Image (cartoon, rainbow, N blue to C red; front, side, top):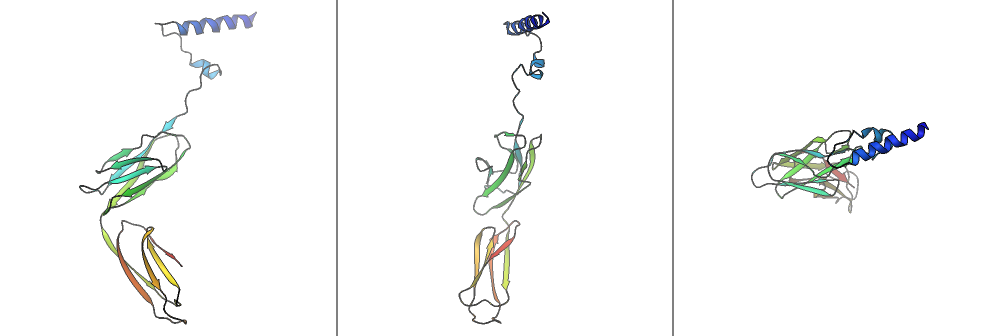
Length: 184
């Protein structure tokens, strides 16, 4: 008999909640009991700030290889894509010719809040990088210096025995920061 009363009570509450023009009772307790709809999982956005752009310059900022935002002033930005909690994110930049932009705090995992600290720093400063190779470079061998994935400087060996004279070279490129990598 008690079970029958519970069913009638729940039916009455549900009917009252469905009446047009009435707010009805708070039905959130049905979710707790597993009888109502599951609330959507929380989602979060990724954004940050751009600094160092001068008039006429712009930078394209990309989230997870899909959504892009074009920024042409020193300002904040936020991607419209909403990501679930615990989702990974990665932000990359592509600057217009004559501008070099690098992002920091640009990857991670979302944890219960929007990401607002991606920092995109842009510059047009040109710095001269010089390299020197010491030690033997035999004929047919080479050392390639590469600045941020582009702008190669190849130093080719001309000697046939140890003790070959050092090979040097330099190249000019726009560098905000970064590293020079070497491949053999």
